Length: 225
Ligand code: DX5
Ligand code: ZN
View 1 (cartoon, rainbow, N blue to C red):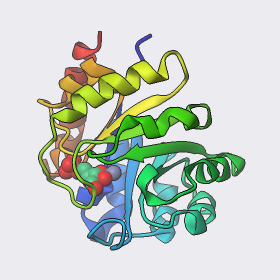
View 2 (view 1 turned 120 degrees about the horizontal axis):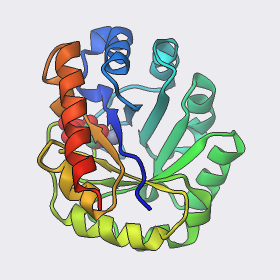
View 3 (view 1 turned 180 degrees about the vertical axis):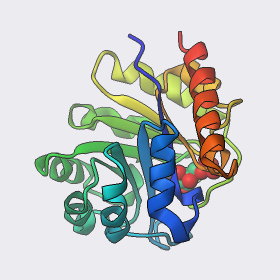
View 4 (view 1 turned 90 degrees about the horizontal axis):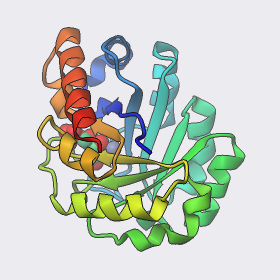
């Protein structure tokens, strides 16, 4: 079963003084989801933004707002992100001792639930939560910064996660260093949601965003089995 490729530009690489216009631009350029990287300066060595930025951009797109919480603890903030308008809330398996509880809380608020694993985390942490998630986010860089190089072991990990998921209705998202070169590698391994920050935003215009979203999508679709 081949799942449709979705492209999720990360606004981490956008112009922070113009979030509304940037979200509108990627929406018009044909993105599927809007990826929002939330960092706390504790779980990761960088600080970005919180639920109020989600609330501020919400009127600029009807598309899925995909919040990637790189924060620890995450549980005290889940409700704030849900209430601000997030559609998908992804927590890191490494961020706290009660992953199952976090996922139950996200779904209880009617939101889609994702689990993210860092490059050094084994996929076995997903074993007992597969019935509680809508997406697995496999980090292909160490979280914290945009513009890093893709870590090749992600490809084999993606294959393994794909096999674990079987025919369950779960997306596999790849985040970090996604380009027209790396997208086909992970799509061939079974990933279907591709986050791209710098590759898209460095093009610098709506036409550039549209072209890069289309090129990454095309490269990934051709590689899907
Ligand atoms: C890294 C973030 C990524 C990052 C991707 O911590 O989770 O979403 O912004 O950026 P690029 O595409 O530049 O690697
Ligand atoms: Zn991210």
